[in-house]
Image 1: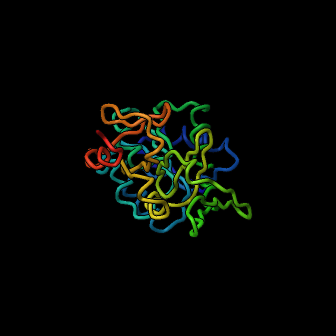
Image 2: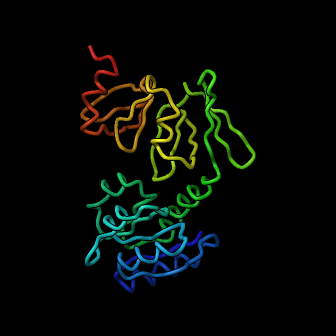
Image 3: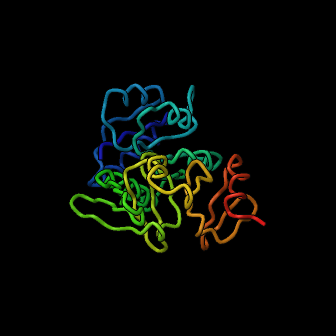
Length: 232
């Protein structure tokens, strides 16, 4: 995976390069001292993964993400937790608090690698009765019953499909999945989540629960959700 570092702190960049050098599947390409430098570099070069600081002069890492038309996989590395909610709404792969330990770094790049490898996965829908979909990984097709899907989570240009105790990561947008699934069975209750209405167990203080998994409800989706769950 071709990767770059974007951080205005030279010592932080040096420490990250040291960590990157210990991971065989990472290919370090460039270090950028500002988001503007990174933006210009990303317009010209193919990059799979960006290690991105948040607070930098001129433009924040969050603003850089919002300005990228084609986004690589992003791992945010910052000294503060303040941006975590906004970061995950932008579907970053992970959010690491400085100082970065080797074990935490390895966990984050493992997530990034899983997303990267999911580029080869595609979703094919059984159009006849729409009772199942197939997830294609290389030459292997895995069947997933629609009724087994509990919820879907957006990760940029990827989607996690959850079916009880299993998770499938596919290279498709959440909007793309929403178009493939029945609007009667699934509801987009947050910009990052599509849920199976039949699998909602309870709704509490702006959150739905599917089993023990809490999923936030976007403010603009609350009223319609209450209609869809047949509230008495």
